[in-house]
Each structure stands twice: as C-alpha cells, then as structure tokens.
Length: 541
Image (cartoon, rainbow, N blue to C red; front, side):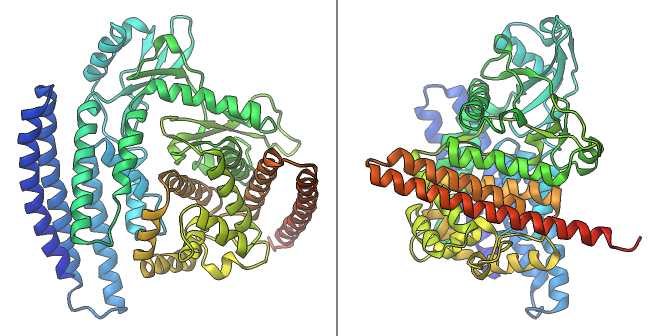
C-alpha cells in the first residue's frame, strides 16, 4: 500500500505544476480573460483539494492496515473503519466542490459491484437530498438575468426556501397569477463557471491517475462529461426531452402510456437557466412506507419501473439516464379507483430530464438481443451480442455479470429465477468479492464499451438501487418484463428488416414461438406466486 501514499504525493506535485501552467496559458490566450481568470483560480484550488484528499485516504489505508494479516477479523474490522472514514472524506470533497463532483458522488452511490458498501451507503444517503443551496439573492439574480424581474413580481407567490436541491440546480414552489401551483427549477449561479473548472479538474485527475496506474483507465469519463454536461445545463433541452419522452410512450408504448407521466412545461416562464413546470404531488419511489399508505403494491410498482425503462431502452431508443430515487415520484393513477382490497394502480412520474441518450437502431437491437439472451440463458446469444456491443470475445462473460449482477454460472443457469437477486448480506459480500477479484478486467471492459452503453450501465445501476429499496433485491416479475419487452423489440426489428416473404414468415414463426414461451413463463410465474401466497397464509400467527 506504500505506492498509494507515494502516488498521492506525486499527484500533488504534478497537479500543482500543471495547474500553474494551465492558469498562465489560459489567461494569456483567452478571448474572455475575466472568465478565464475565474476558471484558472478555481482549477488549481480544486486540484490541490483533490490531491490532499487522495493522499489522506491513501495514507490512512497504508498506516491503519499495516501489519494486519490478510483475512483476519481485526483487519476486516479496521478496514471497515477506514472505508467509512475515506467515504466521509470523499463526501466532504464532493460537497466542498459541488456541481459535477456531486453528480460523480451520486454515481458512486450506485456502483455496488465496484466499491465497498461504506462508500455506497455514504454517498447514497447524502448526495441525493443534501446538496448545497443557492441563496435567495442568487436566485433573484438568475431571475433578473433570465426573465427581467424578481420572482415575487413574476409569480403571485414564491417560496424563497427550496424544496429540493441537486447538483446543478434547486427547486422552488410558486403559484402563478391564475392560481396554478408550479415548481421552478433554478440553476445554481456558479454552475456556468465551475462546470468548465470541474471538467478541467476531472480531466487532469483522470489522466494523471492513468499515467501512474495504467490499469486505472477512466478517460472515457472525460468524453462523457464533455458531451453531457452542456446539455444538462440547458434547461430548454431538458424541457424538450420531457415532452419527447411522453410522446414516445403515447406513440410506441400506448399500453402503459397512462401509467407514465412528466410534469407539464410552462414555456413562457422557462429559459436555459430557469424551468417552470407543473407541481407534482407524489412519494419518492424509495419511500416504501408512504407508497404503502397510498395503497400501492410494491411489486406492481417495481414492475412498472422496469417496464417503463425497458420500453425506453429496447423500443424507443431514447433513454432517461439518471433514474435515481430523487428523480422518480409515484402517485395513484388519477383515473383509477381503488380495488375492493383498497389497492390502487401506480403512476410513475419522471423528473429531471436533462440526461438522455439516443441508441441508434443497430445498438438498440443488439442491446435488446443481449438482454433476451440473458433472460433466457442463451449462451450463444450472450456471447454474440456482447461481442457486437464491444465487450470482445474474452470479456463477454464479465459483461453479462456486470449487467445482471450474477456470476456466470447463474447467468447460464436455465432455471426461471436464475437472475433474481435476493439482496441479503451473503450475496452482497459475494458480489464485492467478484468485483475485487476482477477489478482490472472490469476497468478494461468499461474502457472498451461505447459511451452510450456505459450510460445504460449507469441506468441499470440506478434501477437496481430502486428495485432493491422496494423489494430488498429483485423479482422474477422484473426479469419476465425485461425478457418480454426485449424479445418484442427484437421481433419488431426483424420485421422491419425482412425483405422477402420467406424471411417474413420465419419472423412470424419466431413471434408465435416467443409468445408460447412467454405464456409458459407467465403460467410458471403465477404458480410460484400462488405457492408464496399459500405459504404465507399457512404461517402461524
């Protein structure tokens, strides 16, 4: 572990030297010296903070674990403490720097298969609902710049205290002059300047770490930030995404269109830095107690979440790539009535439409074919479509494992529940053991995959976390839905590509065989659910 401390010291020196050079060069050549000066005074400061945090964490691991035998109880106890301290240091750094750092912290909170539980829990508990808040004065400055007046003049009511604050913006409740209650998303005033600084800092950090440790190759992250951040900072793009998302459901997935909703946008009160939307009442998708009080069944909600995003990925090719719990609300379907048992149908409300990805026809079809192969344990299909998506013939099994969070022997197990995650402690420890054992291969896999597939992995991570909060794992119904939607998408793609009567007939036959197979799975699923219900009813009170 001594290399970690030496690397931290090296990184501090390199960061300081490079940061100083970048500062001088940018100011000298910039067309906007004032902005360049802000950028260049921010970058070295953040680099120094990054380097100090990295060195502190590295030293803590080296000093605390020195001399403790590998696998001993004492070493595991101390390691847990170091993990927790280090996670808290990273949390502090993310909050201190804000902006992109908080988004990275949110992503870290989803990576259960790559990082220790202490990091996951620390980031997950704080990054979604404890982000820094802009002052009301700063909010007023944004309003004056964007709409020409203060919020109290534009709205009949405006609550100066935000109801939520995220990495890039915060949300206030307001009421329009006609009495309509709205939610107003206001971009943090510092984001325009710090976004560029964050990008420069992350680029230097990642490139420097790769120079010292070639196996740590996350340079794809730089390209992704370069592409996605400007779109996320333009709220008009977000508004267009939300409308396109709902339009896709009505046109391409009408069978569930009523169960998926996005807030209406008030275009006359929206700009690239301000977004005025219909106010939505609902429970966060991980607020189990409130959801149950609303009369909504957790399994039914979990199935709806899975189907919503399966339709996006496999049929629409236009995917909301940030579906963490704070961006998903649930409410009873407005048009439905409670059943005789008091149950109500759920409606999923999608928030924060800033980060979307488009999958071209070929990528979408290959991705659907891969998931069809995973659900039906088709080894040849898994290998073929993993390779087509960039994993290569040597890492297709690892790719399947990362997608499903299952070891290879479970991925290819023909039993119906082979992909179901129980979510217990032993299973979590097994997954972390695999992640540690194959860390270098996972890094190589992430380097190879196209960026759009990397965002699909991020989306899977978010959805897995949501399902885990609802069901303490995953369910057979979830994978039945994924298998059904991905298979339908594959059939639809084949129908579009059929150029002869014979090909068309073969596709029709495939569709009939698929429907029979899915019907058999559905029957088996109902039998399993009946057995569970009977076993619960027979339990002693």
